[in-house]
Amino acid sequence: MNFFTSKRLITSAFVVLILLNATLLTALWLEQTHRLEPLLHAGHQFNHESFFAKELDLSESQTISFEKLRQEHFLKVRPEMEAIAPLKKQLVEESFKDNPDTKKTDSLVTAIGLHQAAIERELLLHFHQLSKLCTPEQRGRLKTVLENMSTRRMHGGKGRWGEHSHGVREDWNGTKR
Image 1: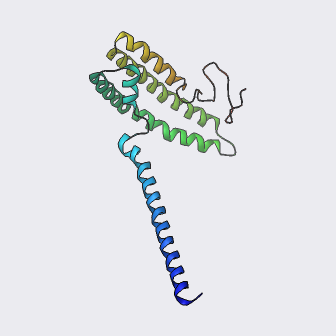
Image 2: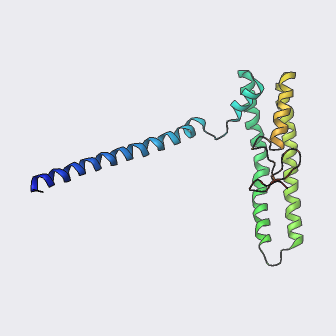
Image 3: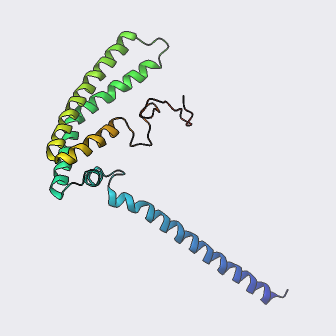
């Protein structure tokens, strides 16, 4: 090879590498912007407002009222949820001790239970307020949606402990027991 042919080959290879790098960077940038787009538009991963509006066929005013009640509900239960968090942290810390203090753990569990009971009472009132906004037909659908949510059947058909609605339990890998 002479000097000019090798120089042309190296220049051509260099240009091809620059084009490939530019293409790769553009693809990565586009992928990143498309990944962020749903998060920017939705605000949350699960839009309760549109879910209930769709499932119950809510009017616009009902949808607004539902969202307002939902926000009020979470403001009411937030103090209870915030009170539970440090209690659960103490419970976890106690469980890692060589000799956990059963009196302390019983006390923590009781305190958590009291806060959870307050949350459940508020939830009952919240569901009652939601049902008052619905037509009789919508109430039936709301009841079904809330029952599914409370048993976690919406989330892959499994309850909190891997159970299906009929009580059959599954392990983390899907093995039925």
